[in-house]
Image (cartoon, rainbow over all chains, first blue to last red):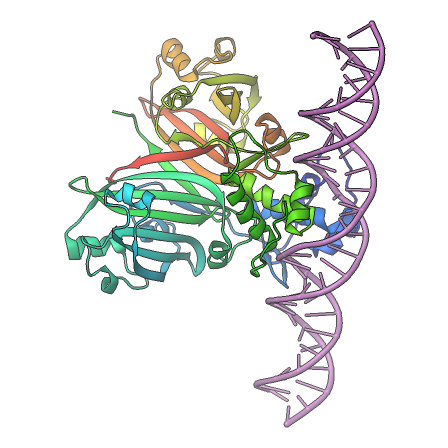
Length: 242
Length: 242
DNA sequence: TTCCTAAAATGGACTAGACCTCTTGCGGTG
DNA sequence: CACCGCAAGAGGTCTAGTCCATTTTAGGAA
């Protein structure tokens, strides 16, 4: 098959991307795109240009690359409500199966940002709980929570895979989270992160930071979550300001 | 100056990125990074690899490229509260000067997504208002609003640069927005968009869609906004669910 | 001095290709 | 039939280079 580009003066990677997006619609489910080298020959561009286009499509969440196998269409995004609920509920509300894996759990000295958020002294002991969040077995996010050790001394023994942190706080420490401040921004993943997320090195991620407060208004937890931008969309319901 | 990489097995663009991030801290404000060709020679890598690293840093919001001039550090991000307030207020609350430019204003036939959001028939006439949002004169977002023509017949004459749409709705049509549903996701910008935004073609953007409802619960407006991911961060205050 | 122009320097957009790792599938071996 | 090994083919990484577009700068003309 030969499909040379009708060059319209737009950047070539963009033209290739449009052509590939159209091609996607004609594929059977589970069928990969033609190999990069074939596409390069067919379109009359270099393989680098094809890779540039596909990298953009990966970032846009249209396709995923499987090393050694091929480039495949991907299923639609997971919806993540911006609300004060647990990851478990957010995901299972969509009929997907949420799981968590504890990557690491240890005591560290708090850095400046964490200390400021939790209103403790810089360098004081905090738990650092790093978890991998999955939907239907596929990695969606890396979540790194920080909580003061002196308030939650036994947390290290109370957390395991698929344990809800908020449930532990409620049942073991009688703490209910009542308010949170959250920020959202884009970034590029670090190698450590995209390794855990099984994602492409060029994939943009959504970085969410959240500080959670209890019923007395005291900061309980400071979280930094890194979501695969190609696999989720945040939603929020906005109401008038006081 | 010669700073060859102490290759640690990580991807070279990542090593270069770390080295450049460190270098950033030593720069005087307003001073550019060394030219790409110089960095390539200094680090002992190809120029493509340096460009790859810098592209990641642009996406991460650390630097900006100026064609023909150099690659410069960039100021910190604009905070955008996820709340039911106007763009004007969000930006001016941070001591920045918000302006808007009407890119186009015309009547179109509504597409499926817009029709569903506004609860009108597919193909019915809607205003399509495309505006460029700027802070201190720098492009931040492209905002494309859709409103039903039959409810707002004279909107075309009532909107100009720096006009607040919500003020027109309130003063001319006695409509107050009381609720909105918003989604956030990442994407890559189209050439049209990054031209307007004066951004890099590889820059990820935050795509926000918002449907706004009036005091009677009727959908008033459907907006698709494309924000430069390197220039803003969204914030939200979360409260318990009903 | 001031202004214009041409050259130099910079980022932008590719191409062509080498070499790597990982997956897949085929064929031989037991 | 089951298993293993290997080769082909896929994506991953990186180099070296060409030519273009834009900005900056230096030098010459007025």
